[in-house]
Length: 88
Image (cartoon, rainbow, N blue to C red; front, side, top):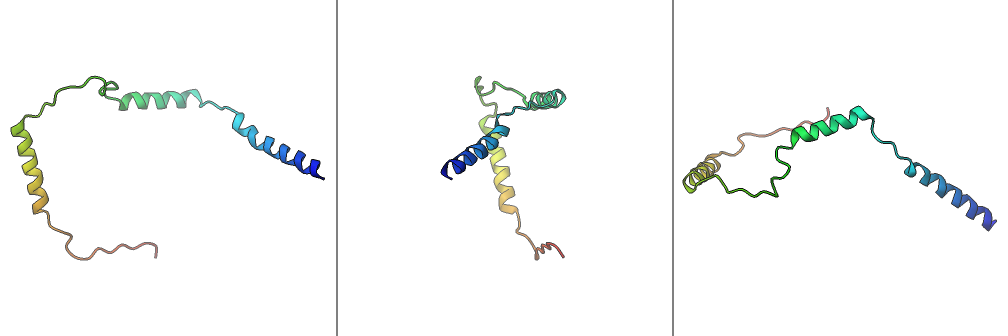
């Protein structure tokens, strides 16, 4: 009885590993579409390898930060109640 259980366990394990061994590469048009999309979304693939100087001077940076902080301080909270209806 013990050998029957061992044999069945081995057979089941082998059947479970068979789908993991199959390799189905994507169809060629799908692979090309993915590669074209990746290339279109990559502006500068080597940006991290070629460091550049920052092109923002101190006066412009101060204007940007002042404008950002003034917008944040002048923002008002949510007025009134917010109702969220989920379902019926």
